[in-house]
Length: 205
Image (cartoon, rainbow, N blue to C red; front, side, top):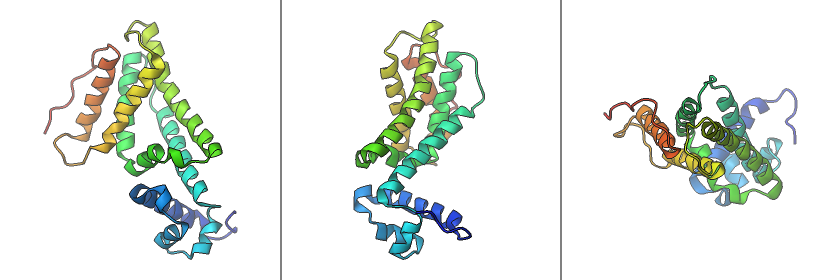
């Protein structure tokens, strides 16, 4: 249901999504009620339906929004020439982007099972579009003789899983800086496809 014109929907709507993001990440989608989301924002439970049709729509909107923004941010990177440079850039981008959004990343991967079929199809199409970007870098690298022959689809899945996994363990202020983690993972990605790292990682602090 659309919010009435002249209301504060442009403020409250994002607050509703932010509250749902926090609660889904903390407790899991299945354990969170619409009443809890409303209380988090300071709304009466019935008022929440002015901003979203239901909880499933909130979950789908969070996932689609995350992936739409990810694809747009990836597309905005400065163009590079060689496949090795492009893979290095992609790896650093992916690590940094996901470290900035651990709750959204957690939901995007862990709550897929709770999407209804139509919403799953929307999210899966966006995920495939992002994966295709990596696959194209790998195909170009193989064609240029820069990367070792491999199953491109499998390699793209493995690289994305490795890079996303940083969000499970990285903590600011730890032994490794964010820049070092991103550089090390770029080097690992290149080695995984038979290419040498482009530059050494910064020294550990």
